[in-house]
Amino acid sequence: MIRTPSFAPRLIGGLAFAVMAIFFVIPLLFMIVVSFYQPDPMGFYKEAFVFENYGKFFSSFYYTVSFRSILSSGLGAVIVVALAFPLVLFVSDLSRRLQLFWIILLLSMMCLSEVIIGFAWLILMSESAGLPRLLEWMGLWENPRSLSPSFGAMMIGLVFLGFSIVALILYPSVARRDRSIEEAAVTLGTPPALVFFKVLLPTFRTSLSSVTLTMFVYLLGVFVMPTMLGRPKDWTMTVIISDKALGDANLPLGAALAVVMLIVTIIVLVASALLTRRRGA
Amino acid sequence: MRTLYLWIIAILLTAPFFVVLGVSVGASSNITFPPEALSSAWYDELLTEADWLAAIGRSLLIAVLAALISTTVALAINYVLWRTGSRFAKMTFALGLGPFLLPPIILALGASLFWAEVGWYGRMEATIVSHGVFFVTLPLVIIARGFAALTDEVIEAAQMMGATPAQVFRTVIFPLIAPYVMTGFALVAIISVNEYLVANMISGFVVETLPIKIFNNVRYGYSPVVAAASMLFVALTVTILLILARITDLVALFGTSQER
Image 1 (cartoon, rainbow over the protein chains, first blue to last red):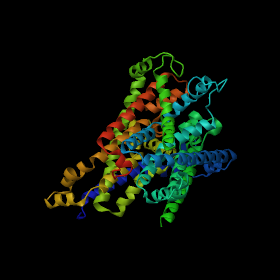
Image 2 (cartoon, rainbow over the protein chains, first blue to last red):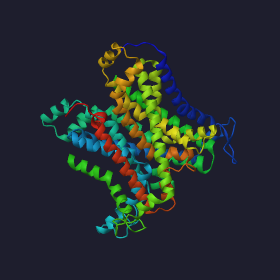
Image 3 (spheres, chains in turn yellow, cyan):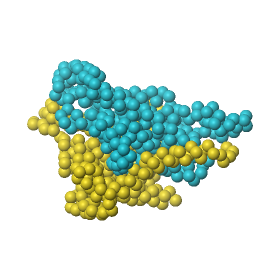
């Protein structure tokens, strides 16, 4: 179209930018500022410029929590992608009607509240309903007891939560892939498993690694699953941050921990971007 | 093999909700499954008790207004990017992708500190604005696909007939991208209704939305009303998505555009 520089687009663009800057960027910057403030047991915080909040991070407790968060998010991300990738491949070969069914199913799962998914699994793993009872009924488990809270229950919750998001992110590129190579391989008599490992996996290596990193960052920030399905010793950094900020009313410490998480996130995202760029070149 | 895998995943994805459904229609006030006797008592309680109704109303109000903010901003960013293609517009677009890439706890804490400082802590407007801004990514990306699908000919034709940019937008562009805008609006509304962490950290003690109420109930001893409330959510979410599937081509929007 003919581009005539005019006032209106600038105004609209400026307004949109201002909204994003004020309500998205400034809160983050303010959080960084607060992380240097001094905690005030009586109220919110005292204006200051101290490093003591970051100093607290360097203690065995926070090391353990960080390590645990990275472990559970990393493990969760890998499991999610390993489960979702084959699903997306299979779904992309279905008829259009069935594809629509799957997209609606995945979209519903993506939109549903963490709270509800957590609650559903809580019931499914409880003594009086769900799996333990089913196993008892089948005669497989004599004295069933609740399966949650536990590390396993929390991981199931995390995987469940991430599954639909990963599937929907991968779906467009998988559905639009060039099928000629796999078809050629199949025609030449290559077994499906070999096609998967030798053709499909290498083709999607870049998008799979970048979606794994995205998922890692996402799972790092999940709050409800660890609190509902995990034991206190499974709690991740997200729970601790919220606990410090809301429970102990130590906002500067919560902010400092969140800033550390922000830095980790940015490092992961930059790594992911570099990975994509290098492979893409 | 393939079909088996698809079935297993479909069952795993839906199984928890069948159990919740079972609990919500059971007569017993303990959580049991399968239910021994059926009853609609929990739904009655959900839809008659003022506490629950207030939470439902608040959640819906927040969702609609947040979706309005989100889609307006997303539409504005996309329009300016399409019209000017300037660096500034690209930067604004990239900024709009940001909230999706960061763990929600960071956004939530930042927003909580920000609103406390502004003096809006505990006000519903704060939750609305933050939801609107944090969920902008989805409509942004979806509306971008709408603009990408616009062909230059129609717009040039309109311009040649002497239409002003505002007229072109109103009579040509908007009708063409309306399905994308609606999809974005609906998805933000659904996500906002379901969102817990941001809403809770901004003003959870005062503005109790439905997810917050459910979470608090689960934490401090729960009754099957929670199951009924959850099912209400599931029904609402699935219904809106089904309506959406009628209006727009979701398969094309999320996947392949060619007919297979």
